[in-house]
Every structure is written in C-alpha cells, then in structure tokens.
Amino acid sequence: MRFYLAKDDAPAVAEDTEDGEITSLYNVSALMKVDCAFVKICFAIAVTFLLQGPMPSSADVPGYQRIVDLEANRTFSYELVRDLDGADPSIATRAALALGRTKDLRAEPALMARYHDRHAPAAVRALALYAIGLLTDRTAIDPAEIAAGLRDPAGAVRVAATDAAGRLIAAKSPGAASLLSPLVRAMRLDVDPIVRGRSAVALAAFADAPQANAAGRAVLAAYEAERDPEARRHDAWTLGRAFPKQPSADQIERGLRDPDDTIRIEFLVVASRNGDPGIARVIDPLLHDPSWRVAEQAIEAIKRLAGEPRTPHLTAIPAGVITPPPVPAETAAPLPRPSGLGAARKPVAADARLDLPLWPATAALMNGPMPGLHPRVRIGTTKGPIVVRLYPEWAPLTVANFLSLVDRGYYDNLRWFRIVPDFVAQTGDPQNTGDGDAGYMIPAEESPLDQGAGVISMGLNYEKDAAVRDSAGTQFYLTMSPQYHLDRAFTVFGKIESGFDVLGRLIESDTMTKVEQLPPD
Image (cartoon, rainbow, N blue to C red):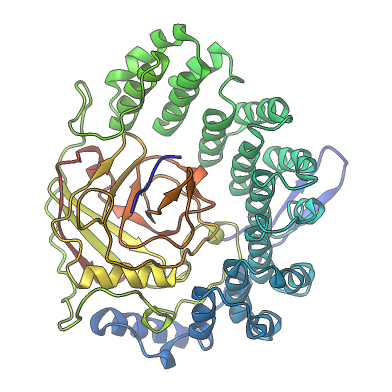
C-alpha cells in the first residue's frame, strides 16, 4: 500500500449586488428535531455497540444496512432509487449518497429529479447534488445545474454545489468554464463563510485552464476582503495551491506576518512557488516561528526556492524548530477489547454502526458529524496520545474496519513510516515500509467532508500518479495542515479530538504504542 503526495444555518438575507436580486436563506434546523425518547435510544444503542461489538441489524436505522451493502458492492439497484424517492427522508439521504458512490450512470436521472424536487428537505437535495458530482468523471453534467445549486436557498445544497463544480472543472467537462462566474460570485457574496471558502477551493481546479488568471485574481481579491478566519484559510490555500503568481511581494509579506499560523503556512507555499528568490529574506524570520508547523514549512519553502526537493521523510526534528511540550499522561480507561475475534477480515455492512441518521441539513453538517455519540479511539504513541473521534454516519465500513483492527491490536507497535513536514503522518502498515496491509481492500466512501488540519483518512494505492479507488486497507494518515486537494479521492472518517500537537514531535522512528477504543462521546 503506497500513498504519495500527488450552529445551524441562521435565517439570513444576502443581497446579490451584481443583478439586484435578493435571496432569502431559510433556517432548516427545524427539520432536525428529535424527541427525548429517541435520544435515549440512540445513547443506549451506542453504548451497546462499543461495549459488545457490532449491533444487530434490528438496532440500525431501518434500511441502512441494505443500502450500505449495495453501495459497498458498487451495485446499482432500483431498491436504491425507490429509497431515494420514498417517504422516509433519512433513508432518502443515505440512498442518494449510495447511488453516487456506485458511480453507475443509471443513477443520474433519479438523483437529478430528487435534486430538483423543491418539496424535498434540504438534506436530501444536498446529498442528491453531491452524488451527481461523484458522477462527473463518468459523464458530462450540465454546468447550469451546478450553477443553480450555488444560488440555492439552502446552505447544504450550496456546499454540495461547490464540490460538484470542482469535480466538473477538474474533469474538463464541456462547458465547465461557465462555472467561473457563479463560483466567483459565491466566493464573494454568499452569506455563509463555509460556502465562500469551498467556492475558492473549487476555483483551484482552473489552475491549468485558460481561465486561470481571472480565477486567481478573483481569489486574491476575495482573500483581501474576507474576514471569516476559516474562509480566509481556504482562500489562502487556494492561492498557494493554484495561483501563487497572483499575490504581490507586499501581499506575500503581509501574509507571512499574519497572526493565524495556517495563513502563514499557506503564504509560505505561495512564496515558495512564486519563484522570486528575493522572497527568501522575508521567509528567514519564520525559520524560528513559535509554531512548529510554520517553522517546518519555512524550511521547506527555502528548499524549494533553492531548487531542492521537499523533505520526503522526517527522520529528525529540524534545527531551530520548537516542538510542542509533552502532553499530560492520558488516564481515561479504555473499553475492554473483545476476545476471540480471529484474523483481520474485510468488513461487511453487518459490521457497521448504522444508528446515526445521516441528516446534513445545514452547511456546517455537510462538513462534520451528525448530532449524537460517536466512537473514539486513543492512538498511543512514543511521543504522547492522540484521540480521534470517528464518523460512522459518513464512512460506516471504513470506521468498522478501523475499529475491528483496533480491537484486534493490529496497530499496536507499528511505526509511523511516512512523515512529511506540514503534510501528513502515515502509519498502519504491518511491514512498516508503506507496502503492507492485511490482505484485503475496502471500498472508498467519498463525502463532502474536507481535509482540513487534523483529519484522519485512509491511504490509497497509486497507479500512474493517480489514486486507485477502492484500494484502502489498513494504512491511515493524519493531516498536519489543510490538504483540500485530497478531498475528491480519499476517505475522511474522523478528526483529531485532542493531541494534535503530538504530530509536531513525531519522527519516523516513532511508533504507535497501543491503540484502543475509548467510551463514546
């Protein structure tokens, strides 16, 4: 297995200053009301699962197991179309995602019809549009459909539209250039900063297109005007990744002095790819930045400006980098490991935790976990513990696979075989070389979750510089900074809850000591 670099939506009104139209954005959080009895049931189900192993199907959200099974086997079925069109909206959302993940073009008409159904809840329409985006590498989707999604009243739908737009542009689909103006408009004017930031990332797909200069100028202008921290980080990432020639020397220098360490990191990428050797003098002070991530990226930027390759493997902490102090010892008692599990095996739908309804009714929920208890895992390392919270509602088989391996002690004492400064720390190979796994592969579970700093994702095989879908096994990585370019192919299945700075002390001779489940949270 190899892996290479390659609050609810609030009611609001946004005025579109380009055409004078006013679009009302409605609060859809009312769709997520859950009575107290159901909450208690979910709590009991979660505790039972984590203490005794996989739940019986009778405890699942009715119908989810069959949907996950069809999805995992890449089976288009009119059962899924029926579920998509059915009266149960929580089943419809899951069916929409499954249809997209099958990558079967026969799903497109049903998904498009549900996306156009104005009586359908926002969560259903959002995942229908997201699923349509997953088909863009197999068929041409009318860009006008995506542009309409960028103007939708529901924030969740608009998030889905940004993802679909980026996929359509990257696939060089006919007419994709027409999405430049709608994306720029959303990046500048959308009321939701999540949508604004996601629109900038989608524009990165124009990096090698004739529209690159126009897109780059628009992203730079948006960054200069943006005040929301997370949207600014997305803008800055896009500049470094796709349009490093756009910022002036003064703008780069201001970015390198920004109080936000992620912004400083992204402008180091801008500086290193800008190509002006004179920028090195501005980078030098950041070699001793109090943020370990910034200092490491400054070293990499100086290397790049000198024409040297980036560090492929971190085997020692670079001189001058201030590593984070050790964290206090973790005292939380782990859940007991089950006995008699046998050898690791490929997960099936019956192994998955399926009690969390997938209901991303807001823009924020399109990029995170649903309300409820989630599995947690403590990754003990030779430099301290890292706790991750897992998202089975988005990646049921990936989470089931990970927890199965954890319960078997599979990850104990494995080495962090690949650490790339300010990129990822990767592990999970029993051979400790990057070439090993447990002898099986699991299906990809693409989602709208973006790969910001601190996410946990599965590694993939590569062929001809492209990630191979459905090739994940046991290897996983943790991101040290935003890596939004990995969103389209890699399965995000959780996020670091505590211990992020442990990543700043790890080198490739370090190991995982013991990996174990914690009580859900």
